[in-house]
Length: 161
Image (cartoon, rainbow, N blue to C red; front, side):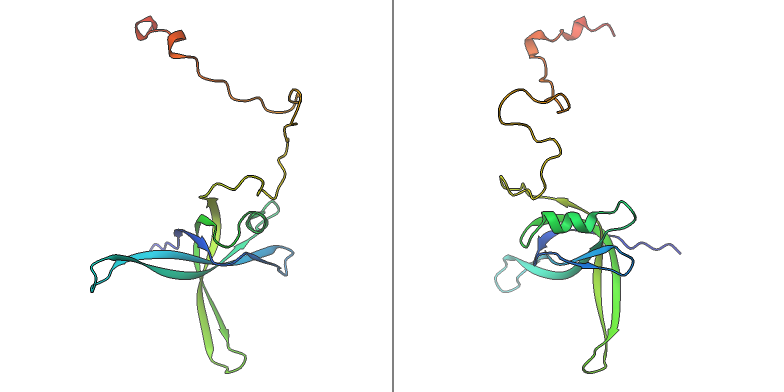
């Protein structure tokens, strides 16, 4: 029998990511996440948002994995993002009562920004920042070429195919 454990959500962070080192030398970022479910209020007939609060964690995986670092450096409470990941059930015994506890978490495999960052809010400098005056350096990527104006394009009947 086939199994599928995949989660895709759009929502907002409910708290800043918290970074912790893990025993294998990697890092994990944990954060709260909220998504809204829409439901119709039976008394008023109006559609309402019903928030669903989730716990998420993202790891730096492998030698080149930097997802937790990227999360720590670029998103904050209130930012809207798209996350893609899978469900994980954490189980433990409560230290005070000894009761068995459990929590369903989302392990984030990838995320994307859904909001423009405000001017100057990028915490990481650009790899090749463009100088404010003078010509761009030789290794700076040139700006994309503008499309030729419509008047300078060949007419469709001039195209040989």
